[in-house]
Image (cartoon, rainbow, N blue to C red):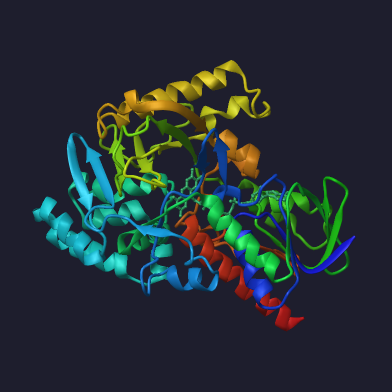
Length: 473
Ligand SMILES: Cc1cc2nc3c(=O)[nH]c(=O)nc-3n(C[C@H](O)[C@H](O)[C@H](O)COP(=O)(O)OP(=O)(O)OC[C@H]3O[C@@H](n4cnc5c(N)ncnc54)[C@H](O)[C@@H]3O)c2cc1C
């Protein structure tokens, strides 16, 4: 039996950031990860010569005084080779045969939009003020779609302003809080960056520092039970029979998974468990990874966002293979000016793959493989409108669906961003890291915000609550 100050369940970005922060504060931490490698959505995997990324394509807010820079400095992540995306165009948006380019910097961005939409000056000024706003409580309680349509009347402009968010959050007209929309938009407009390398670089940097401080990050350790004593959790029991005791437990797993790990409990109320397990999840993402013929495509230092029609809101439809929009992201070449790996992402509803849940990785039914091929074909056809001839450049391709994320990360319904936040339900706009068990905390994208920026802010929130708990003990 191993003992430590803090056991962390799950080594996604949130789990590793909490672990490193607490290790730096002098605590002995053990991270238990069910997969064979750490990182959760941040991990990369090898296929042939390529290392393919899962949930890291670009990040915002790393400029001097940027929203994320301070946090990344203290987490030792600014030492990684971040490459700033094209200042004059980091998002290239294709809608109905027209192309709109987003420059970096809020003022530059608003001015560029005014040139495309001169009749929307007033609404765009209000939008600029919104992006710079810090009035978070108001934004938490406001519906993003209603707000956008109240200040902007040109429906094309609303699509141009929202299209890049399509693969960064679930754009649901009915529920999305303005808070989530703005936090997933502003840092990227302030400055956008790609990592010259794969997501494992970021994961490894966090893991190395945790180990240097005496902490442990253990893989192939699936926690199956959090054992409860009189006043809290006493130990985490893993599938291989190993047991880890600690004074405090922090779970980076999805909150419904966390609750399911707590067996019979005198401390965790049923209503809390029910709330965590019935809250709807955001839809997932389908990714088509392409290996391109050497020398066939020059690197482009921006994302290309292509809409099939004129609406990126409510893009993932239950049971429907339609591809309503895609984001095309190129990996920074390790040498030369040509791209070897391009990823195409599109929102995908769980219902599209739900029938195949329970099938084993690498032994999926034929119908699932056919579904993936059809969606890949549609993604590539849409990509042709932004990069003519891309289909002929492809040497090999691989795909992942919400089912992949469900199996690897144990995220219910393969949700890409965790809980669906709802502006009308304050308890579900921001979920507290505290559970009803005093020494069991949560972290990760379902609580407050998702993405690298959001999960990092959420990890800081969890650490604040941990410190309060430690002081009170
Ligand atoms: C396709 C895709 C593309 C994305 N692209 C971007 C992007 O370009 N930029 C950006 O900022 N964000 C992006 N994101 C979002 C970002 O990747 C996530 O918000 C973030 O990585 C989530 O981190 P997390 O720690 O909350 O959870 P996760 O990464 O899901 O980590 C949870 C971990 O817990 C482990 N676990 C679960 N149950 C157990 C158990 N019982 N025992 C032990 N371990 C357990 C899982 O295996 C996993 O490792 C993307 C997401 C997706 C899906």
